[in-house]
Structures are given as structure tokens and as C-alpha cells.
Image (cartoon, rainbow, N blue to C red; front, side, top):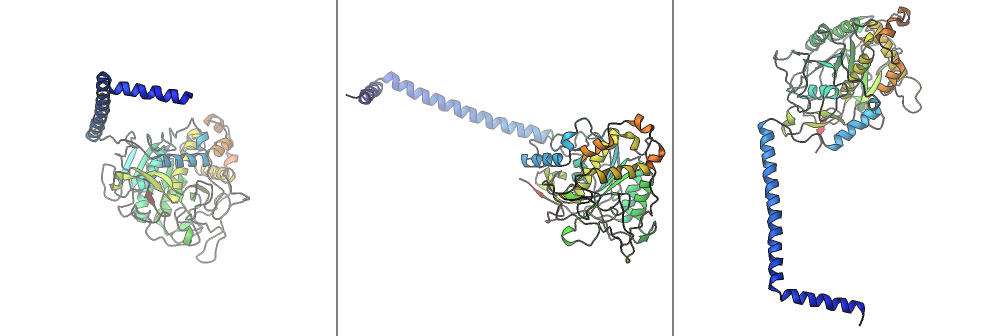
Length: 439
């Protein structure tokens, strides 16, 4: 008899003995009922716990969960692309940033720890901050979001001016009023994720009220960052206004792979006879830099109507906010270049723009400014390295001659008439214009 046969006989004998043993049969039956009871009890307990947590969260206005891993992964990819992953000791503290847009949703879970430094409502004159369009919340979140998505300059003093209505539109007069307010509130940076057609102008004279307000801010040493525009797939030949104003930092869009976003507007830097526009020169050729502009993780105001607080947006608006946050880190590291700093003023703006032209990540094979790619992708790590670790003490020793720049013809490049400045509406189905939800 083989070993297998012996084992099978023993097993069969054991089973037959158990089947004839009432004690073993009772034990087996009780064990099954006991195990089933434990599993059922655990399921019931967990179900009750989930319901309790849900009721508790609703009663206390607490949002459970956060942005999906896809969005946080995309955010990290853009941080790596622009060098923010290399910067750990700066958050924009001591720098005042003013976002002119559609407002801000302060009840967003990523903004609940935010305290605004100032609020202006040009549209409805409301005293309490709100956002009935959504674009402003998305742009502000790129700079100051916490807990879910990660703003790139969370420590800034944030001013918000609502100059865009619920349809995503604003007027020259309204946006100009908001820009003037930002300057009067001592903003160091004004972030304009908006644009339209420019006013007629030449030789420093312009018919455009918004461009005048932007130039006034620049003359006070306020950095103005604006969107290049989203007409890259049907380009009109130049960036939008007020991005086109000479000393404004004009921002185009890039993808996570480091390519120029297809919707990013190109600049016209060669000049033309009519409408009259002089050629642009370094470091003011447009656009100056690219920032994240394709599928950029953003905050959605009011849960977007279906409970989704996070999503993504494509456009140079997002790129503008991203670069504004990066500029805040630079001004924190070098407070001497702030508007009230020892070396602040228009010359500081020119110096920073020169550094941008020399320390941005150019495309493969690129040697000079490109009408689409600008001077390259904004790199906060390269900018900080180029400016060094100097503080205001070192800056105080710099001679005035180091900041002298050639005289320019302000606003000489303005030759178009602005229509209504606008931002992409949240209801748009065009990814190049606005946003889509992620599951």
C-alpha cells in the first residue's frame, strides 16, 4: 500500500468519526454561527460609524476627503518643472499680492485658514468676499491654497479685488479701478489673469484706461503679472492687453512635459507700420516666460454645484497666478526689490525682468527669445540662484549705476482697441478656455 493510500484512509476514517460524533458536529455548527455573528456585527458597526461621521461632518461644515491623487500628482509635476520642489524655506511672507479677478470663495476647504488682507468689490459693492463665477477662487488657490492642493506662496498677504462679474466679464474702467486700489493698498505684486484687446497708443500715450492704471502701478514699483492670452490655435498675432504693456511680466502657458501649451498666444515683437507698433527689445519681448498652463490643478468655488471642490484648468490665467506666486518668493528672499525696499521701484522691475530673460528654462535648441516660448519656462530655483542669497544689507551696498537702464518709450507697443476684458467662463466646454472636472 502506498503512502497516499494510507493518508487517504486516515483522513476518511477521521471524517467518518467526526460525523458520528455529536459533540464535534455541535462545535462546528456553533463555530459557524459565532463567526457569522462577528462578521455581521462588524459590518453593522462600520455602517453606523460611516453614517455618524457623515452626519457629524455635515453638521460642522467639514469636507471629508480631498483632491484626487491625479491632481496632486499633476501639481507635483508642475512644481518640479518650475523648480518649486527645490525651494523649502520660502512661502511669500512679508509680500503683498493683489489678485484682480471674479472674487474668492472663502468657504472652500483649502481656503478656510486664509485671512484676507483686503477686499474690494467693483461689481456689486458687497462687503463680504464671494465668487459668483469661480475663476478668481481658482487663481487665488494656485497661490495660497492649503490642506488639499498646495499654493506656491501660502504666506503672502493676499488682497482680492472683484472686477469680473458672474459671466466672466469686466470693463476697462472697473478693472482699472481695481488695479488702482491694489496699488493704493501697497501691493507688491498685482496678478491679472485676464486680458482683452489693447487701446490705441504710441510713444507713451494710450487711449486705454486699464493700461494707464497698469502703467501707474509699474511707475510706483509694483510688479504686474498678466496673461498672454488663449488664442494660440487661432492667433491674432500678439499677446492680449494689459500683458502687452512693456514692463508687465507677460506669461504664456506650458504643459507638464515642458512644451508650449497649444492655446498660448504668441507675441508680435517685430513691430509694424499699421496699427503702429515699435519693435520690442530685451528684456521686454512678449511673452516673457511660460508657466503651468495645461491641466493645472485648481480650486472650484462652491463645490461646482455637484460637490467637487477640486479640478483642473487650462489657460494662461493659471500660468499667470503660478508666476505671481513665484515672484512673491523672490521678493521675500530679496525684500530690497519690493516697492518700499531699498532698491525698489521701476529699476527693480527692470532688473528682475532681465534676470528672467537670462534664467528661464529655454526650449531644446533655443538660444534667444521665441514668440511662443518666450525666454523660457519660469524657474524659481534658477532665479533665486542667479540673484544669490543676498539680503537687503547686501543690496544696500549696490550702486545706483547698477540699476540704470536705457530710457524706454512707455506703451509704445499699444495699437489695438480693447473690447471687454474677460476671463473664461466656468461653463465653457473648451479645455483651452477653462476647466473640466476630474473624477
